[in-house]
Amino acid sequence: MSGSYSVGDINVDTFLFLSQRGTLDMSTSFVSASIYESILAPGTVCDVMIVDTQDQLGTLILAGDEMVIISFKVLGSISAKYVFAVHELAELSSVGAQRGKSYTLKCVSEEAMHDKTNYVIKSYKMLCSQMIQDVHKTYLRSGKPITLEDTMTPQKMLIQNENPYAAIKRIRSLSVSATNKSSSYVYFENRKNEQQAYNYVTIEKLFQGASVKTFQQSDALNTDALLRNDNNILAYKLPTQFSSIDRLMNGAPTRISSKNLTTQEYETRVVSKFDPNLLDGDPTTMTSSALANTYFNVRNPPPTHNIIDYYRPATNIPENIPQQQAFIADLSQNSIKIRVPGDPVLTAGAVITCTIPNKNGFTGPRTEDDLISGKFLIARIHHKIGAFGEQPRYTCVIECLKGKYNGGVQ
Image (cartoon, rainbow, N blue to C red; front, side, top):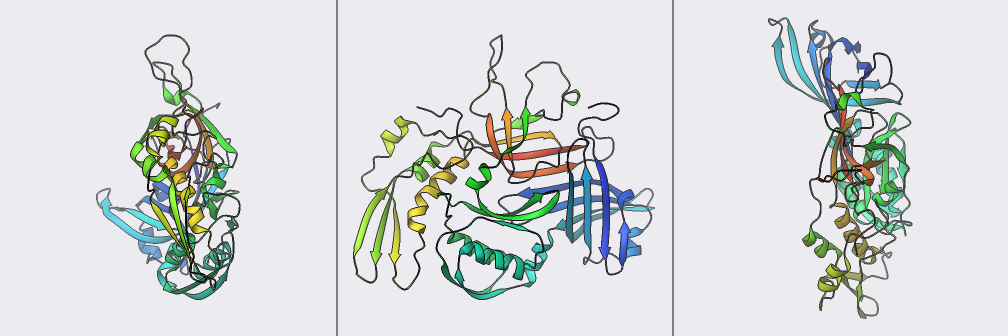
């Protein structure tokens, strides 16, 4: 961090419009942008504010069939490049004594446009991960690479007149991972090697990635956040620390009832949902023994029904549901939302490390807050590029998942 560089500085290298009518460089008209990525959404969206003083909008005759290319970088990190389809032009108004136009250009991943005009009509008999690959390439017409986590047991599925995103949702409901027991599959777009890419993987697999960056929050008083390093947490908020009710509803044992249609035999067994091998932000548990001993010893646990049909392949879904519910229940708690200086290395599905000191009134060295420190998964991220003059101009607002407390509870 030397010379005239300040934390949050950014270089917007490219801002191009591409269409059959030509190519237009709009970099001089660029004001600000917000790019949103999420592991819970199938694509990336972007809002760009533009001030057009040369009637470039009229010159190109913007009609909604254009592609938009945005690339940017920060000193000492990687570059980021996005390619979007134009979705909507909104909030148009005149500026500068009506000598220019200001408007917001709303963009989406190109796959989102194909989703609206393509329908899946196909009968499958293959692994669910292979079905996803076919929908991704054939019906979403995506040329972007996709990372696939293998699923168990080939399945039969007939998809009739469903949009690709709806078809992916159906396939995901039958997907059981061959390696990660929670089978918490997500289909989403992020960036790999500075380019956009897709993923069909479990959240457990994402947690196995190496941390891309470590953030910390200084506990020093009367200091300027902009004078510190780019790994400083500018602000943080905890939407939910814990919910005992959610933990009880989703973490208690489940009764699996199975009926074999061939033999007409009926079987019932109780399955515990606690599995210390499920991977998230910490290898310990956040469910205390007191809570489990008091409320988990129920007479009639909630049921999950399973029909065994000789003519259909086994799905492994009933056996998988308890672990999946407990895993998601953990992830919905102990989440954190942070605002940090912008860095293109941060993307949805990446893992980061946060160190936040305890807040107390005692003097002396402060220890790390085990509840909100540790390894986190980026679930959602907002890349905010502000207008010239804003400090810091480029920041990231990140919603992170952790799932457990460092060291666990007794």
